[in-house]
Length: 283
Image 1 (cartoon, rainbow, N blue to C red):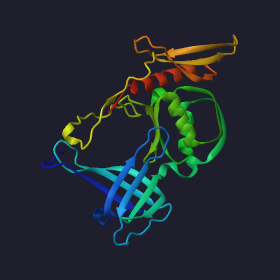
Image 2 (image 1 turned 60 degrees about the horizontal axis):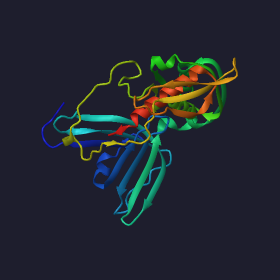
Image 3 (image 1 turned 90 degrees about the vertical axis):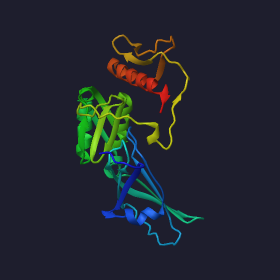
């Protein structure tokens, strides 16, 4: 698992199944992967030297597959991790110096997943909605049980894509809402559990393992939790639901939207309070 010597990162890139790693290695300027957790497509950027004008431009829609990991080093896990497949959607060539830049997006977020649909769902649950979306797009679904059972009386998908609905539900319930390796994942943010309820493995990251590091704490607005309002049709009154509070006496952050049900307001307030707590510091 661990090896001696200076830590060395490893990577592998294939294009439509052809391994290009050795050809790209002496030309590589940058290999950057940005992963999203709230409904967005993962983005892959590759920049290569083209000093001899021999680089071929990949075809639009070509599929790149990427793996990252460690080749050697103490205290690291040796081996490459599959980071998914990406469809090429933009290519740029320029200079000086002559360079080729390839930009690609997660293949799971292309095609029908971004097509606007018009569907009205009634008396359903988060789990049923997401399972339906996964099935319509040929995906597996991994949904945390505590989120899957949340009731949804009405959900109107008026000219919104399945990707937009996934992002909407993730925001509403403060959940990881994304698609990775052919699987739709919906799980609470920061819980340290996978969607099946199993704990994620922990590890210690030391300063020596990092080429750069940054920790930041910002004292901005000190909210005392979050507040969401809802309309009570029985009394024709606007009521509110509060969640959290940091014990510092600050006023709760009031959400702009007024919800139709008490339960929706409660979910929204809890989700916003969690986001407030996470924003206190970053690493």
